[in-house]
Image (cartoon, rainbow, N blue to C red; front, side, top):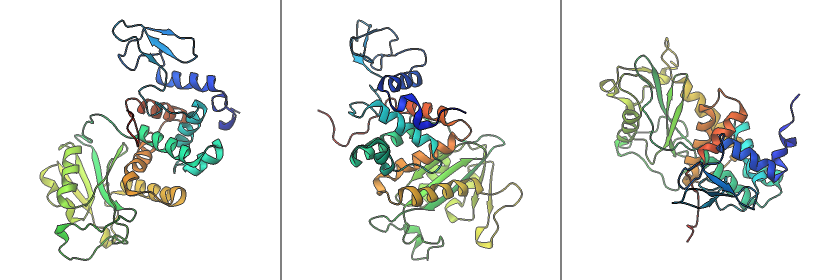
Length: 309
């Protein structure tokens, strides 16, 4: 049997943790985050390198240019946070980190949110789907917003989704059948907003599957086919037409949020969505490979609540 997670050396030894992060970020050796040069010198301080490019000459570590930059937390704490985030299907709480690491809650909370930021999608993305492929689109609501925001299109009509009046933070999800998911927290889930997300993120050659919601009326003009199931008539599957992949993701997300996190401020909801989205999109690989991807995802991102001077 292999070692248990807590007994692995990089959770207890700072040098082992640094080597673990360097292997994950730089499998072929250190690369300067400032100029991308592979030429460098080792300095007297372990883990600190100096770029050998004559136009750069800057010092850097494995934390430079990542969500970990300027952190005072030891790398052993970062290693535990990244690994725990990638192990649990339904997430991990900052209180759990606080207890396991013996640190203050604000430190654990910041570690947690930086790791979630590393998991967030970044950069330019290609549209989903394609010829012969199916993309599901669905929306849900989670959490109470400070003010009730209702689409102008509703015109006083009653809500059809159970609990929407109280759980009024709209979330839109697009799932490629058997593939990845993309989630979007929007202010109001009206037809204009949802149609913009769907048409921008899905190739027109795709088959679009939705429920009978009016938000998707007219989508047949944008895709090779727009096929629906009628949930109000208790129709959930007809042939290969369904939105069960999106519904399944929403189920995992809501159970995790209620059971692990219990509460999140609306300004942070997109990070929690990014965490669940990341784990869903990497569900076919091992926990160790997922942790490496999360570390790589932290490159080029900073999460500061007070801008450095």
